[in-house]
Length: 363
Image (cartoon, one colour):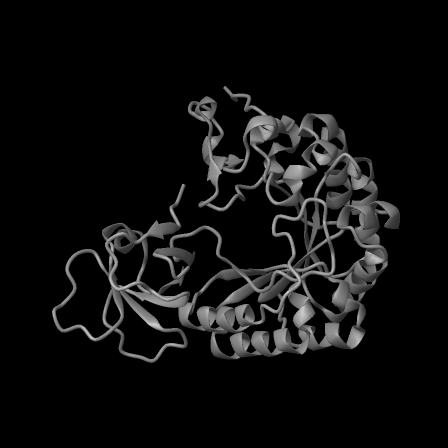
């Protein structure tokens, strides 16, 4: 598991709260974020830049990674060139209250996160994909559009994957505005739809009327040309509808780049609702199999996320992807000799106790 959090016991002076461009080498150009030089040993005697001394951090980062200081002696590397996934939080506000929300919403102004995320992405200057999540990023409206426009203009080699509930796209003009920035493959929206019925979807997301908004938003976004990764999380409340949901989505929505079916992560509100929501994949494997059949008939790629491969029937195991971020996944001791370990995402570090479904070694 990649370490992303560092207690800077040797650091001096204390680093203020905020985002920083982490530099191992001297900086020759201006950066949007303040620069923080990182040294493995003693710093040069007459250095004028802000700096820290931490060998572990120095050996973990690449020059130009982005870190966040909590102002109390710790730094988290939030954009890493060595990571298999990079994601930035844009807001904790949301107009849904999902029963399994991994980032429970807070009703407060945190628009400073949008500004810092833009600066971080510009400084990171990454030739790859960066994820943007919330909360609900589309609540920023015009502010999000201006941020995306800046990124597309100044670092066009950076692609974005934005997690959203899609409700704001019920405004067709807004969907078209965002679509004007979204050349295929450069900005993709991951939008969840959890059931083929309004009653079940609205129950899972804790908001009456959300199904109507999301379906309308998905139609507008797709018709405007925004690439969409449709996301589904099976639970006790919706697992029977998964095949029907895939069929419905394939018929109604356009610009679907992928359908992602995701195992429940035991974090946030999912912990307190675990017994009401979680099902072992063994119990709905037939629904996954049928959903994959519908997806293949519709020629829409499908992927299974967050599933240990040993929890899936062999005939659909090929659709499982190694998806859990490298800073929050692990493999129990039972996985040591598994023949499919290299292709398996393993388990979330948050999985334990009653939320632990034991592995079954594949020989």
